[in-house]
Length: 250
Image (tube, rainbow, N blue to C red; front, side, top):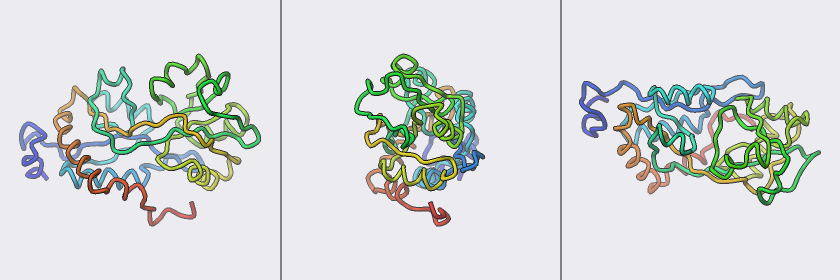
């Protein structure tokens, strides 16, 4: 691996080449709210990027706030962080890997219309603890609508929705609304019944944030070149659309 890194020259010397480059990301949770590590699709994507770039990328899942803190202190790259002005001061960002939609999940017993921001006036929306979204969302949160961000666990946020404590839960997915709805109602069947509103609240690119203060920043050109090749070959799309062999009924 050291010889590959030297040929690619993303670091100062062969001696400086790391044994692994952690890619920090939000841990998925199971139906009981327990941390279940790295989602198989994400693990496959990181492995594909490692193979294409020749870099020793290794997926490491943590609660989202913890992943951000580790990345900010230079302990690894950060997958899935929106490029907000605050983060741009600390991180450089790769080119997009793919796009995700931001879907509003509601209780079918208390549905509401969503066509534009004004439809969210007075609503309470649950998001993952420490999550940031696009500029329009950030400008309006806790002004036009209220944000509840006291949980890293999707099952706990869905439970809040089922109990009527929030009006909607915001989830990210590259899949369409009908597929996300089916998935939620299958995986979290014990938490209640859910509907995904058919218009996404927004769309954002999935980026890898590279700490500016870390030697890992020298890998940024290599990552960008690898992502571009994967885009052209269609391998990113293929990974996203491949169902894990052990995916289960859902």
